[in-house]
Structures are given as structure tokens and as C-alpha cells.
Length: 370
Image (cartoon, rainbow, N blue to C red):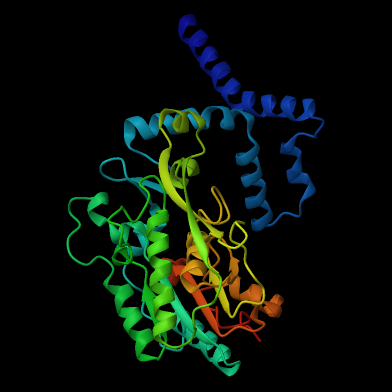
């Protein structure tokens, strides 16, 4: 009986240590950093569901114990359980996929009236631009899982994004010019997307840019400019964003970065890297597919610079990671000078934004360019 009682006491002590050790360590760490214990922040906010959720998020993000343990645990889960975290999925042959993109493909397409949702937002934006004498070209970028479903699973057969192509047909029926930036735009025979990343390769971005420029010329919206750009080959090494989303340094250390061949665009006359011009007749709106290689390493090697090279003129651009469905147009409302002298607006967004984009259903309201 005495032995059983002792065992119970030990279990209770261990249990209490597990409960109180983490907040004690956190409080000591916060005070060493000259801060009040984060646990006390709950008394600084008005009790409400939103404030309590924000408080829980702060505890989770700033937890010393969790931030020490989580990266190693995530590495173990990746290696042993094929778990790439809440935003990633592990495909075949080392390819990684973005979970929301797969979710967009596999879930049923919601039924909406033609005067609601993305169609309304796009037609409203087109009409506003038309009233100002500007044309609109929509460039829908497929997710990697749409282009390479067989890299995700052997069971993927046939057309996996029929609802996207059907939506594009609806856009065309409404007189809206649209291009789907699929792998057919890449004439170099190289993979269209990065294995570790959600985004396209530099060669595919260049191919899509040339395709978009060709449409602008064929429609008579633009004539070639007189600025000649050259390409400067370079190579970078980078870990893909899906790996980085796991927030695990041990995981990154165990995987070699991808080697990526890029082509930086430079002005032939000056030898200087490509630079936007606010006086350009072309405005480009888009998301992280336009940011990659353009605004981050190696810079001036992404879609925007290669579009300028194909057009033989600089462009004006506005890029917002994850916000191309609505936020870039809200930026137009705040900065109408972006539309100065424009003849053509090229609006790029990834296909999953048709459902998951910020404010997709109410995008036509308060996000105009007037």
C-alpha cells in the first residue's frame, strides 16, 4: 500500500512539473530579456474571442520551449512520417506541394451566380479600366499540382483542373482576354516548377512573359518599344518555400538547396539591371509568382523583367504576396497614379485565389480603381 502511495506521489509531482515547467521557463526567459512575462498579457486585453485567440497565438509563437522543441520534432515528422507540416504535402521523387493548392483542386467547386464572386470582380475591374481607355489581360497561374499531378500521386489521371478551364471559358464569353500560364508556355524543355517550392522556374516565368507579350502585340494593344535588354546568366541556390514553411532549421540543414539557373535582365545601353518606369503604358499586378527571382535573389530575373524584355520597354508593377486577387487593386485605389498613361493592365493571380483569395466574394466592392 505504501509503495502504491509513493508511486502516486511521484506521478503527481511529474505531472505538475510538466504543467508548470514551461510557463516557469518562459517567465524567467522573458524577465531576462527585460520583458514582463507574456502570460500576464491576458490581463492587459479586453476579454473577447478575438483577443483570446490573439493571446493564444502570441503564447504559441513566443514559447521558448516550443520554439526549441518544434523544429526538431518537425524534422522527425518529415523524415519518419512524411509530414511536411500544416502547409505542405510530400509528393513523389522528392517533390513538395502546397496543401491549399491541392485542397483547391480536390474540393468541389462552389456554385455561385454570375453576379457574385470572382466573375463579378473581374468584369467590374475590366469595365472600370475600359471607361478609362485601358485594356485588361488576365493571366491565371496554375498551381504546381495542376501542372504535375502525377508528381503528387500515381492515381492522378486526366484533367484535374476542369473547373478552372470552365471558368476561363466563362471569362472569354464575357469578352475578357485570359491566358492560362501552364507548362505549354515553357519552350525550353525544362521543368516548369521548382521541386521544393510552390513557384515556377525562371525558364517558365520567361516563357510565360514572352507569351503574354505576344498576346498584347497580336491584339494591337501595344507596339514594341525601343529599349533593348540583354540577359545575364547566373545560378543561385535556395531552399523552397514549402521547406521553409516548416520552420525547422534541422530540416533545412538535412536537405540541399535547389540549384536554379536564372537570367537577369539588363539594359543594353547602360548595362544596368532592369528597372520599372512609372511612365510605362503597361501596369502589371500580381502575387508572389511575380516577386520570385524579381524582387528577391538574384533580382531582375523574374516574370516582370522578362516581360519588359519581350515588350522592349519597362513596365510599372505592383506585387503583393498572396494578395493579387484583391489587395493589389485596393492599392490602385490608394495610389491612382499607378494608372497614369496606361494602355494595358496585366493582372496575374494564382488559380487557387479564385476561391481562397482575400475578399474573393466581395472583391468588386471597395476594391475598384476609381
